[in-house]
Structures are given as structure tokens and as C-alpha cells.
Image (cartoon, rainbow, N blue to C red):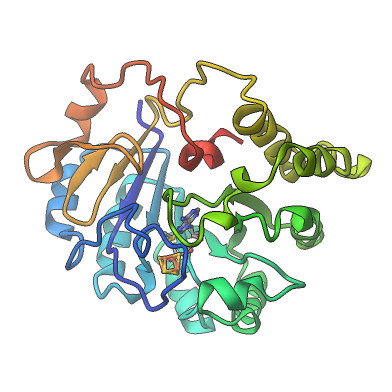
Length: 286
Ligand SMILES: C[S@@+](CC[C@H](N)C(=O)[O-])C[C@H]1O[C@@H](n2cnc3c(N)ncnc32)[C@H](O)[C@@H]1O
Ligand code: SF4
């Protein structure tokens, strides 16, 4: 049974973060918006969770059409946003439309990284987060972990614990030979990594921040763990803006919502044991 369907409702955005998948050529930009009529036809059975993402979903004029369709099929709707367009009215509308969790991107709370890399001021993201805390919606903070903020990961973790937010650290995924390559966590040598691992605070050792560091170190630096099963396997699907259906964010399409239905896909043998596992899938492993 498919647990989670991700909808990339549009790849366009009102920001231009320097490392964004769509700006560094990892993912193709697609013109237009996900077709809500085709989506309605495709989603013909209930799923545990529907996650709406982009690009920036809050700039999509059909957002509330997708949400109406999603609400008929799930009691658990999440939406990922950069927060730029969040205000009290928008939050009330999202809640009424069935959204229960907001994932908002914030790369640091102390330094200047958010301002430097994300093209959206940290001040205004923090303002959006403040509104979120009053909205009664569940909040997850997505933080892109780079060589520049990895040693401050527990600042973010503590901030999340204090405010009752779920912390979602994800490693930066950078294409080789790009100028931004030094931001990659792999660019830190063994020595630096050992130092990071040895300085995990004891009282943080069971947190997601610590799990992130320990797992990343073992898998990508020490290369100790082989044959990792894809964490997406069998349980999740991604519907791209053009209707393409993928087994994960970074794989090739297997079909299109134009000529398929969720019930048919759920029963198909397409879900084999996927043994591919890469840095860009790491966040789902936590
Ligand atoms: C593509 S964005 C879409 C949602 C929304 N626009 C936002 O920024 O939260 C989803 C998540 O992917 C992250 N992301 C974008 N490019 C990335 C990259 N190259 N490596 C790792 N995470 C990345 C963003 O920071 C964000 O948390
Ligand atoms: S806000 Fe999200 S989609 Fe937009 S450029 Fe930044 S990471 Fe990419």
C-alpha cells in the first residue's frame, strides 16, 4: 500500500536559492502547473499522507483545487514552503483546506547562511515561523546541511526541540564540478568529520541531528554500510508537475497520471527492492 504521495505542483518559485535543485540543473524546470483534473482522476484511492511541494506551492493558482482533491483522499496533508507568502489569512485558509503540517525551510538561526544562500531574508522566515506557531498547525523545519552549517546543527536541533518543531536536516546535494562544490558535506575531510562526530553533545545523542551526523559519516565518509535499501521503496510516489509518476524524487518516470491510476500502480510489480541509495535520498533514511 502506498503511504505517501508527493505532488510537485509547480517547479516555478518566488525565490532563487543558489543551491536549489532547479537552479543547479539537478532537476528540470517544467512550465505550468500540475493538471488538477488529471490528478483527481489519478488519485482514486485513499493514502496515508499527501505532501504538496514545488518549486513554491504557494504561488500556484490551483493550490486550493489540489487541496480539495487531497482532502477527499487523506486526513494527513503536508505542505512544504519557503514561507515568503505565509500570513495569518493564508494559514487559516490552508488549515481549513485540510493541511495539518507545514514544512518550512530555514538553514540557520544564528549566522548569515540563510541570507547568503536562500535569497529570502532570515528575518522574514522567522516571522513566518512565528505565525505558524500561533496557527495550531504542526511545524517541521527543513534545514539544508552544508559544510558551512554542519557544526551548528545542534543550534537548529535545540531551537526545534524548544519550540516543539520537527527537525528535518537534509544534506546539500550538489552536482560535481560546480562552483558550489565546497558546500558539499563530502568536501570535509576525515579529520574534520571525526571532530564533528566527537563533539556531538551527550544530551543530544538521541536526536535527529545526531542521527543525521552519525549515519552520514558511516555511509558517505567511512563508506561502512553497503546495500542500503531505498527508504522510499514501496511506500511513496512522486507526481511531477507534468504528471510524470516517479518512484522517488530523483528517478526516471515510470508512467504518467494521464494514463494511469493510483489503484493500478499500487498493485503493480513496479515496486521491486530498490537498492539504489544516494545522498539526495538520505533525508528519508532518518
Ligand atoms: C525544492 S524545495 C520546495 C519547497 C519550498 N520551495 C522550500 O524551499 O521549502 C524542497 C526542499 O528542498 C531543499 N533543497 C533544494 N535544493 C537542494 C539541494 N541542492 N540539496 C538539498 N536540499 C535542497 C529546499 O531547501 C527545501 O527544503
Ligand atoms: S524556495 Fe525552494 S523551490 Fe524556491 S529556489 Fe529555494 S529551494 Fe528552490
